[in-house]
Each structure stands twice: as structure tokens, then as C-alpha cells.
Length: 194
Image (cartoon, rainbow, N blue to C red):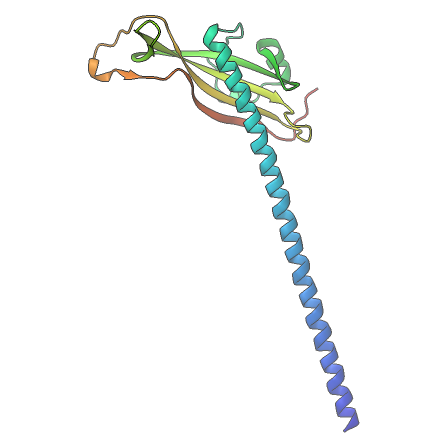
């Protein structure tokens, strides 16, 4: 009878130890999962912060662009070509600016006029045609912890200072000047520039 009790006690002890071991493995798994989730949230937050700062840079460019076209116009290029351009390409062809001690480069392409789109010039009570430009921004290491470049593109609508030439009055539409659309062209991860 004593032997049977010891056998049951040993079995119970083994089962309790096995249960505790299983519980500790599940807790470890949960901790690893939470750690991975926090790392992902931190990386997403950094990426959103980079894009926010880059959009501020685009807004600054657009504001200056309203006054005069900068000297860094390029011919129409594909997204693939611009997305793969090295830093040296941007330094050779792009305009360079600085915002909050961060150097960035940009180029622009003249897209086309909108013969039925107009920008209402309230000052002179005149209606002018619209011309569109594509601005591409290159920011190298926007945040200290980032090891990748960021490329954004935006479409800018600007007054062409020419009269409308729309043949169908029903197609007339007002366009507001400034940035129309912004997109992240690419985030070149794990690339180092020499």
C-alpha cells in the first residue's frame, strides 16, 4: 500500500512538472509574439514618420514651385528608371534643398496641359489653363536609424497663364492649384550609397 502511494505521488509530481513546463513554453511563446508585434509597430511608426517628413519636403517644393520653375527638369522617365537611380544620379540632375538639417534632392517632369481644366485667379478675375508637373523627391536616410532611401512622387497643378482652349464647354472643370496626389514610389531597403 505504501508503494502504491509513492507511485501515485511520483506520477502526480511528473504530471505537475510537465504541466508547468508546458505553461512556461506557452508563456515564452506569447512573450516572443508580443516582442515581434512591438518591433513591427516600431518599424511601421518609423516608416510613417519618414513619409510625413518627406511630404513636408514636397509641400515646401510645391510652394516654391508656384513662384518659378526650378532648374532641375528632366524628360519623362519611367517609375522603374527613377526608382533604381543611384544617389549620384540625383546629385547630378536634381535640385538640392535642406529641411531640418536633412538634405534632399528632387527633379520634375512636365506632364501635359489640361485644355478644359482651369485655375481660377481670384486676384485678376481671370481663368487660366492648367499645366501638370510630376515632382519626384529623393531623401537619403531621413531618420538616423534608417538605412534606406525614400522616394516620393507628387503631381502638381499650376496655372499655365494661357487662356483656355476647351472646345466643349460641358467639359470645363476647376482644378485647385498645388499638390494633387502623392505616392511612395519606393523605399529602397538595405541599400547603402557610396
